[in-house]
Length: 465
Ligand SMILES: Nc1ncnc2c1ncn2[C@@H]1O[C@H](COP(=O)(O)OP(=O)(O)OP(=O)(O)O)[C@@H](O)[C@H]1O
Image 1 (cartoon, rainbow, N blue to C red):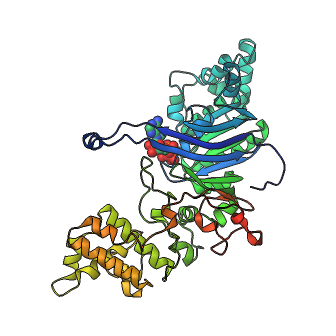
Image 2 (spheres, rainbow, N blue to C red):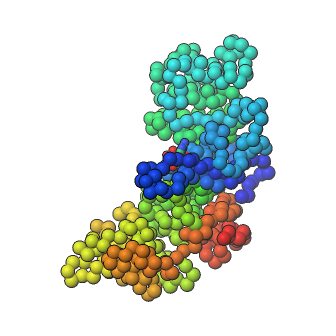
Image 3 (cartoon, rainbow, N blue to C red):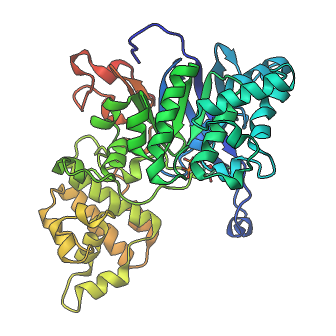
């Protein structure tokens, strides 16, 4: 990615992976299935520059916290490298690691859990100074603790020094946690949902304090948050994670105002915004986040993607392909309900037609459904209004017949040659554009939907097979 200056990154993350081995559920054990690790962070690369505030967003379980913990060395990576100020952190001497642990801190979501209830504010903040032998004796230590308490807005310090966490409000506790992180004068702080447990009325105060402290202490921040308005408010750059992958990253305003990855688009569409036009509203994702134990092949987002790419020579619209692909997913997952289709069709009706329409229905909230779907309670789409090529219609009917005959395998096989997409077979590589990186096949080929203007944008590098 282009940057406006030639600073060296403070943190360089390359091909980072963290897999958690997890014991299987009882069904897996009984069926003798191979244990599958949780792919919490799975191939993330990211540079963080000094003085920047980088935000990481994404749905729950996408690997944000795991990434944060890897960066502060609370976890060791399964694969990949993290370098901090030019030095690889996964392979440090004891002395270097000691120094690293001073320079890099983490603030957690829950100040009730992160503070020891049996330690006073003074002991909590003085502890890292003692461990790191950073002060000469009690007087210097006490002066340093008092100073940092004043810096985080807990003044006069004497009022707080002997207090225990349960005597403080949530906001005061989080300020103590921030003071504990700051007292060793770090360079880089990972802030994991730092205000989400706090009362809404005091969040802005804590965030503003963190901005002031950034200048005062010369800090670089990584903010992890579900809250996209917080990311916009605090962060210069934003990275969007999906199932362990970084799908898009770049300057925050560009990523939010002009999202390129369909997942980023859907994530921001989930936030109510009266100014969004029809096109943005229709882009919403279908279904739930799949398990990181067994992520989808190719692009991990493809089963939910509104912009899934039809095969070469597809004679219909992209919308028709997206629905046909949803049919295929439901057939694979055994979600097509033959009995419901028979009931729906009635004695004189056509159960095949009903089942095809059931399969073509998108699993999205009501505001994203077609008129027919709304009229029929979300269960039916009028297939005749869809621009489906004749071979696709024939394949869907053949598949529906197989489902009605109880032959699940044949139902999937009928679709195999027609309803195909490269999104399910090739993993997209993050490719650079003028201001960002996006990992999406739509931006790989000239003439599809290049971004980054006339210089070819993301088309600069060939796609991986
Ligand atoms: N110590 C662990 N052992 C096993 N699995 C883990 C562990 N920590 C996280 N996971 C799993 O890894 C995946 C990513 O979790 P992580 O907490 O990093 O996501 P997240 O995006 O921060 O989610 P949230 O916003 O809910 O905190 C999840 O499926 C989670 O269950």
